[in-house]
Length: 347
Image: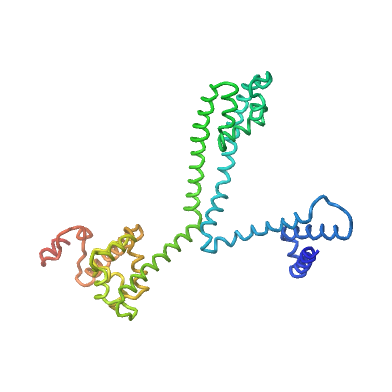
């Protein structure tokens, strides 16, 4: 009575609060059926054949709506990957069931017809054989037991009571269907999981965000270790001193994060903000840009800047000297401007 009263009060308040929107949510329809069946069972002796308690348990299905929140919480990244992979593998599941069912069905029909005479004649262990292979349905179920469960009891039933030649059939079935085909199916599911992990937008964003946070934490650890005076910035001497630590520990640590450092002075020039010092933010951002090999976007940007520089140099030479520089000059490895003769010869 207490639970029914609470459900009824909740439903009444939802109707007052949502008005017309109440009828747009099919979960509210389930709640209405639950409350309605409880009220009718309380005021009359009518039995609808449905236990209201079971209907109340159906409300627990509303917890499935919490799956929408999983992708927004970092702790549930693995759970979101699992549920997403399950949804993406539904097609694989359907085809797996169809293929296995068809193969096992054909084998079951053949095997059941082979042992039918032994069962009809009441041969040795006929009851045991009938238990596993007495009908098509029993044999069909036994085939899946051979593939996915304990395969020895059905095997012993035929080998010991009918013929030892069935040993060859069961071993072949176990090697081909129970091992090879099952392993291929598992590999397909694993491949589907990796494909979902590399193609789902939410998973990719979460992985990238996790990698950025890990990189930021490690760079801040390096900054705290190098900031010996505790002023919140690193000058050139402090930066070079920590990178040139005995044993090259810091260099190896950076190399493990795909940041290979050969020249500490060059690295400092690339990450500082122009004021001769490096703070934590500049170190994090600069190291992130320098990690890994050269990217296509970086090479294309460098090529465009190089072309813009060539065009600017040609315009300046035309404007101030009245000379047009040939583009072939920039392809020569030797210096071009070696006196007036060389300048004129290269025009």
